[in-house]
Amino acid sequence: MNVTLLGWSLTLVGILAVILLDLWIVDRGQPRDFSLRQAGAWVAFYVALAAVFGVCLLLVAGGQYSAQFFAGYLTEYSLSIDNLFIFYVIMARFAVPRPNQHKVLLVGILIALFMRGVFIIVGGAALARFEWLFYLFGLFLIWTALGLLRGGDDDEFKENVLLRWVQRVMPATGEYYRDRLTVRVDGRRLVTPMLIVMVAIGSTDLLFALDSIPAIFGLTKQSYLVFTANAFALMGLRQLYFLLGGLLERLVYLNKGLSVILAFIGVKLILDAMHTTGFEWAPQVPIWLSLAVIGVTMLVTTVTSLLKARRDAAKAAEPVPTGVGDAERTPR
Image (tube, rainbow, N blue to C red; front, side):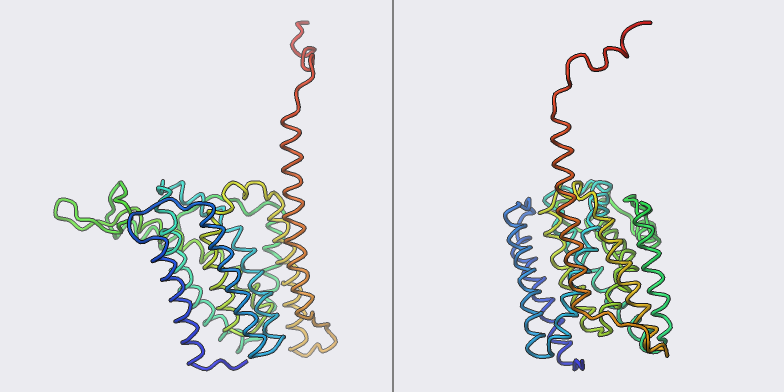
């Protein structure tokens, strides 16, 4: 798949135009709360936009690349859902007012998209030159999957190097001034917590990219598809943040589903690396199978999580039978 400089330029301009339109429609004027109806409409819009892009790829580049995009998009979107847990922690840590949260997520994700773009360019160039890196990526994804199964992915927020540097170099106010990033106090120009939390969102997302970027490179070697799948997943992420709300706490099997996806892609990466480095007998996993595994895994994960949450809620609502615990309270 050969994407010209013009194709890249039009894609970047289109993505930027959509983000600016989102920013103008939602955040113009005074900061305001983001309703569930708005969130649902925007999530549907971004999912439809990704679907249209995938269909355009089908018409222009063929079914193989279109399927790779959809598989990569589903993988990135699934992994991004897990990111929302830490976003909630960051918002609570910095006590971001709810009307300001959409703008925080938007700018934070723009920072993340830029840094992921750099990561993809460097990673794509390295993988094209050193095919043995696919072995490392595959093993890393399997190790990450095992960590998720063991519960090693806690949702504790830890300040990274970039965030600590920003907080040290840029003096900040102790309170928010609506959605302003800087204010002048006593003749000094200070940043507000809005800017700090945007850096926190963007830089923390880059840490999550350490497993999501290798995962999508396991589905496609095309940097253009890797970037666009990441862009569409990130653009729809902030609306998903408001739409899901407390539902995230009910997705109790999410990490298990993600571990299955990461382990599957890790094995696929290793098999692909073996096939291209002299072990031609190694089987290659077709993209349709990858798409099916990712889709079915997330569907089963979501359904079983919601069923368990419903059973737990029903069990908690059951009345306690009379006399239960009396024997423990009877003096001996």
